[in-house]
Length: 271
Image (tube, rainbow, N blue to C red; front, side, top):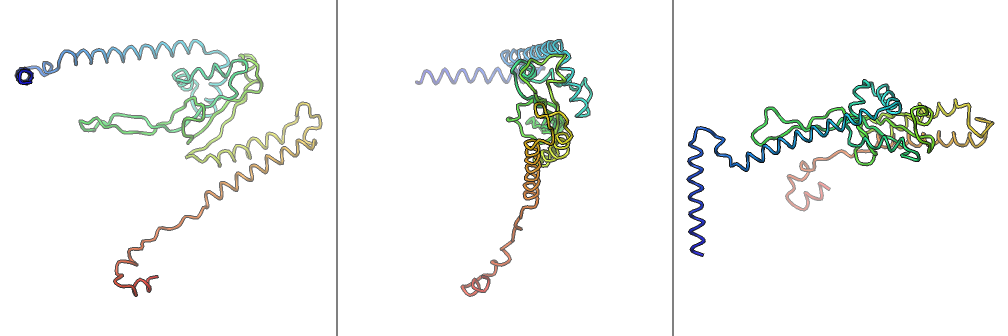
């Protein structure tokens, strides 16, 4: 034990002397051990490699874009007031890009969802202290989603398939329906109510072709269906109003009533 202690002591003394010599040197770089410099170099090389791979992936996806993708891009650009170039760059950079291919495949995904809303972006504070603190700033972003992992606080743009057939450039406009509903600030009930009452119900009531049902709007089942949709929208409206007009109890400061209580008779009077 004594021998080990002396060895440790000698080692510490040597390292301390080396550190003192390094600090008094003309270059601060000599303080950094070689392994730290190597780590920094590797980290920089790794970042460059990742950026290179990301760029290659984007260009590979860009080469895959055809008439089907162009149809989606044009609908999104028109609906969200973005340029087609902005939408294209967003799509090919999205980590869920493969969901588009799954949507086009035969018997593929029935829906393809996009959220367009504020998301928090980590940005380095220019006036931050040495602790490297960051600011979280909201920034509008379009991204592909499954609809179950992110909070929905903005606009949802969706594509729905009408059959299990493979989606091609020639049939995409017939096989895929596009729609949007706005739930800004998380007002999902209001957004859904508006979408159904102002878009879907008027479209259904003006529908002339009901497939195998030749009577169209005169058919009793069609009338019952439209009545049910109207009733559902009414329920949505009532639920939204009940939530918005809910009773909120005002917080009462009881300190003014109890601060001067001294004896039981005071408590009885206060009660």
